Image (cartoon, helix red, strand yellow):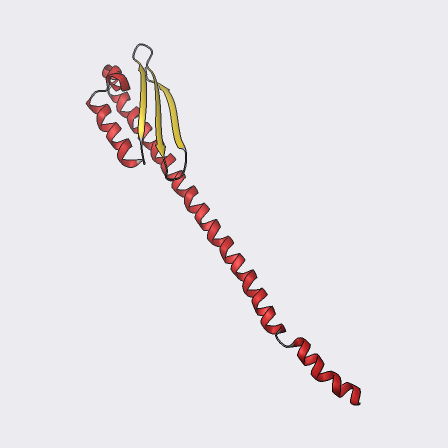
Length: 137
């Protein structure tokens, strides 16, 4: 019996602090999970912002195409090289709605072929482009 009594304090000394070690490991695992969720949230926010800008560029291009359809007689004035008042207003909307927004509109008045390219640059990313082509007859 003396041997078992003497072994008890030794076992207590070996296990002393083990609960603290388990708590630290659990805290480490939990913090890694939280950091993963925060990283995922930031990636989702970037993707959502990028999708919003792509949708906005698409909307702006379709808006200009609609204006061109209603003003087919003056189709040549929408070309970027000979930009009329409607084109200047549209360019201002592109610049206002997209960060660093700029556009190029190419119109072949003889065939009615129109190509629209919209460019924008998000902070920390390269230049994005939205391009569409349509035939207005």
